[in-house]
Each structure stands twice: as C-alpha cells, then as structure tokens.
Image 1 (cartoon, rainbow, N blue to C red):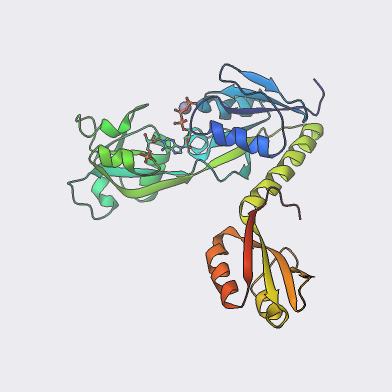
Image 2: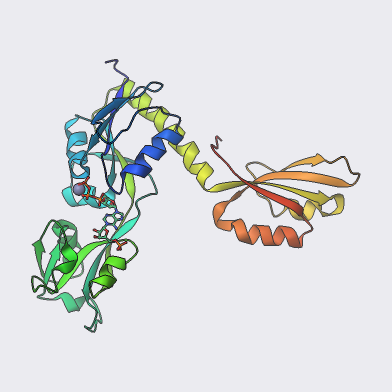
Length: 287
Ligand code: PRT
Ligand code: ZN
C-alpha cells in the first residue's frame, strides 16, 4: 500500500450511508459499495473505504485503523475520542432534545430538577443540565428511548429529533434543545505528510462540491438600457458576463447566485426588465 493511500471509515448502512457515499461519488471518486462489501479500494483516487457501524468509526480513526471517517457530531461528542474535525458536511442534520409527556405543562429547565431522564446520550445530557444548574438523573438505554416515559422507566427523555414525528406518535413534546448535530469528517491526529496531501486533495474536491450545492447558474436576456440595473442585482463569482445577442439592443447575461437568495433575486430581476430567465444547477465550483 503506497504511503499516500488514505483509509476512510463510513457507515455501512444507516442514516449517514447514502449521503456519505454520494459525497465521495460527487468528488469523482470511483468505488464499489454493495451491501455485502466491508471494504473497497477506489480505482481512480488513493483511497480505501471501510464500511462499519457508525459507533465504531471515531475509535477506528483515533487508533489509526482508519485515517479519516464520516460520523454524526452527536456520536463524536458523546464519546469524546481524540480526533480532529476537518470538515462539516451539512447532511444528516438533527438535534438532541429533551422531551416530556405532551400533557405536562412546561415552563423552563427547572422542570427537570430531580427527574429521571432516559437517553442514549448520557454525557451530552448531563453536561447540558450541569451547565444550566439543573440536577437530574440520566438513565442510559441504547434504543427505543421514546417509549421510556409511557412504560414508567423515566419522567422524560433526551433523544435525537429530526422531523419530530417520533416524539409526536409517542405522546411526547420537545421542550429544549441540547445539541445541534450534522455529519462531520474527522481525521486521525498523527498523519504522515503523504496522507495529509491526499486528504487536502479530497477536501479541495469536497469544497468545490459544497460551493456548487449552494449556487445556481442564471442566464437571462436584457435590453441595453436595463443592463446596469440587472447587473447590480447579480453578484456573480467576479462580475456577470454580458454577451450581445443577434437582435440589436439585446444582451444575454450570465451569473451565479446563492440558493438562499434565489427567489428574492429572481423577483427583482423580473422587476428590472430581465426576460427568458434560465436557472441551471452547477456541478462543481472552483474559485
Ligand atoms: O447501525 P449503526 O450503528 O451504524 O447506525 P445507528 O442505528 O446507530 O444510527 P442511524 O443510522 O440511525 O443514525 C446515524 C446518525 O444519523 C445519527 O448519529 C445522527 O447523527 C443522524 N441522524 C439524523 C439521526 C436522525 N437524523 C434521526 N432522526 N439519527 C437518529 N434519528 C432517529 C432518532 O433516534 C429517533 O428515533 O430517528 C428518530 C427521530 O426522527 P424523527 O424524524 O421522527 O424526529
Ligand atoms: Zn450506531
């Protein structure tokens, strides 16, 4: 194995898997990922994949069995392994929240004083309550946390929430957010410079993919007298390109706009005389 080949640990099957694999594929990295595969070597980038349970990933990266890994920040912070966070990946977003039976009234965190809280995240929960001056007991369970109050195991829970559907269907309500999570890329803290080089190349590709995800390419037609007005609405990467059309007095303008401002900008563009507006996805964006 060449010194520059890196090993990445990704979740074999679960809520992180699809987006993790998609990210590497969007970076142009080719590899096989069938459900029975435990490892796979890329044919066009110096990287080997290990497919694992998510809970094992931080430990493997800490020990150097894997050089980097993709993991939920919630799992990483709960277990406090010695690894570096090298990239926020923006997917598998969720929050760790305190929830109580729906029919109980809730005023503030003092509600939890002396209460028994079921959770798979005792460290994060205890740290949060301690920082708020609340003293409560956590009861660690590894799954089906949401049924704990209804079977009399606990007064409340602290669990991962995404849409809130699970809490709702178990007669619970979310009352306080403890921790905000997303998928992150982690790395071992003692990497050779050859491996660091490979990781830098990977991070550069990830950056380009992420930038493109937040941007749209806009093409529109505009009459000469409206160019300046339209230009002021289009930030672009540097400034918009303006190309004359075959019809005298008309121009085509090309630019890049942020996904977040998308609808606002499109409305103002129409108001400023832009016509035939085309909006296209961008695959990669390299500054
Ligand atoms: O088998 P393996 O050990 O690898 O996976 P796992 O079962 O331990 O984890 P998995 O695949 O369920 O989740 C992996 C990571 O995805 C978590 O560590 C989080 O970082 C992230 N994530 C994002 C979530 C959710 N959304 C999520 N909704 N993890 C869990 N949930 C569960 C939650 O525990 C609760 O049961 O979904 C339910 C709540 O969802 P809503 O939509 O009803 O609110
Ligand atoms: Zn797990």
